[in-house]
Image (tube, rainbow, N blue to C red; front, side, top):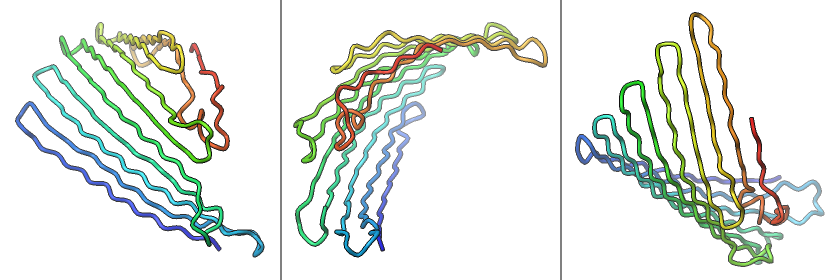
Length: 220
């Protein structure tokens, strides 16, 4: 009463171009089919078929105390839902996401570390269950993280982040942390402002998605 079948293939390749440069690839292919259990013999048998493919290419450069990384990724997800497995009619949905990231880190000394990161993600989707067509969402962010070991007992960390979205007006975010370890005990203080926008599925998944959801903001 009910059945499933899963298939997963996850290739990983890496090539060291030189002592300073390396190139890596990470992939994942997933496919499954699920026949849902029936409570009684009078129910109509249904099933889901899912397929997803994820690909990531990573370039990394390390020169002394400086490192640089570029990531490009794409993932595709789609499903087919058969309300009756005895006919060929189904409801389907598909989503594509493109992602790019730049990361740069430099250590001025062994106690002083800085990093800058920029990301961009663009998602599109279509579904026969959703009245909205050609659903799109783009998010871009830039962040900076600074940490310094002031001395053997005191360490501080500061982070700043700005995000842009074509759906919401995103605020400026920050984080601050201070840690003092004079002897065998530690005193810590931290404060940050967080912001979370609804995910692609939160907004557009049918049934259950709500395109009128508001972002969440917190100060900790």
